[in-house]
Image (cartoon, rainbow, N blue to C red; front, side, top):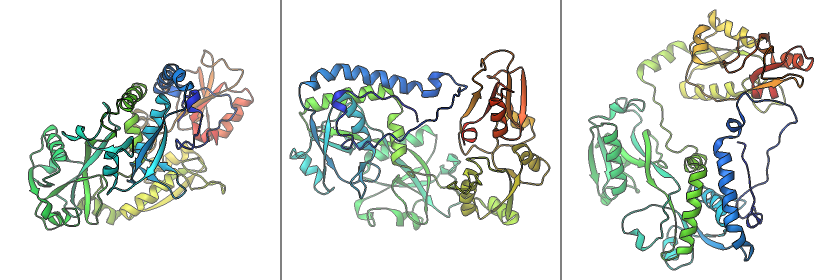
Amino acid sequence: MPLFAAAPKWFCSSRKKHGLGPDKNAGKGVRKMKRTRFMNRFGIWAVFSLIIIMISAISVTPVAAESQPRVLRVAFCEIEGITEKDPDGTRHGLVVDYLNEIAKYTGWEYEYIDTTAETMLEEFADGEYELMGGNYYMPGLEAYYGYPDYSIGNSKAVILAREDDDSIQSYNLKSLNGKTIGVYERATENIRRLKEFLSMNALDCTLKYYAYEDLTNGNLYPCLERGEVDLLLGNSSEQSPGIRVVVSYDSQPYYIVTNVGNQEVLDGLNMAMARIADSNPNFAAERYNANFLNASNVRIRLNEEEQEYIRQKGSVTVAMPRNFHPLACENPNDIHDGLVHDILKEMAEFTGLEFRFISADSYMNAMELVRQGAADLLGFYLGDVSDSMQKGMVLTAPYASMNSIVVRSKASSFPGDGLVGAVIVGRGLPGTIRADRVEFFHNASDALEAVNRGEIDFVYGLASYMEY
């Protein structure tokens, strides 16, 4: 994702300590024009973030220039998604991402100190660390931890069901009505949030409380497996054979805390985190999703009707245009067969269906195979719902989001009047792009050559396909 960067003097030292790698982004010297404006191209939050960082640099650099950057000791207990360390020593996770971002505004550097869950809290109480991350808030804990005004995102709570219980459907919350949910009685905050979730969705469920003595290896799975309850309240890290996630929702916030009475560090946290929220309100959600890639995935369960269809159908034919990178890749140097092939492999494993591919010379010819009944599916559709209805096609839910671009001749006055545009056969120009005449080509290579020869003014198409 394109972004702006500003590097105050105190931030130029030790990228390695901040867990920042080298810049791997590179661009090609091709003169292109996106059909979106500058702010849409780079993202308004990237621009706003740059402004915020520059303001922060102005306000803190004079102080930082007079002394060495402050080094804070950070407790580092390995927790999946929160604080992790690779075999080569690289540290990452939600807390690390936030601390790196905070350092842009405070000038802090960090000394990560490895510890364990059994000793970390006592060591923190003894003053061995100034910072500790991934903490929950509960009334009364202010006596032990200095909480900032801002969290670093929310954990995820999940509601679990038996794998073979067809009466509970992840796509239909109303199927939870009348069910009994097992909860651990000491998880008071999670229970409170569960009640809020049920109330917001108008769900009528009974809660069955279990004590510590009822736990088996720290969980209540046997209670669900025996049928004592229909559902269990759990967290996103829980996985067990025969049990599936029905629904996931935001639960308790995570915090980075400091020592009680350490007002200087607490003020720094509040200042930096306020500016992070101002520059990018989605930062917490973005970093959570980046560090918990498979967290709280709701598992789809096929009903009997769907399973019967699969048994009868057996195989599905898919029409694909040849060598349409990155959706269909036939070059021996490509590292995969294409995005469509990759996705359908996953679908085949899940459903048991066999997918057979029929190649076509062009995108339009592939579409014709489907319309004539020679193929069941078109591997991808380059258009919106209204466009598909005009062409007699029915769309599934989208499985990828890709950008389209305009490539123009240097001699063209795009955007303007009297222009000749081009698309591949089967596509059209969007309403926001005007041309007096539209030419159609069977592939992007022919269209781009026509632009180079000056026969047309511009070509519109899928960015990754035309750049290949």
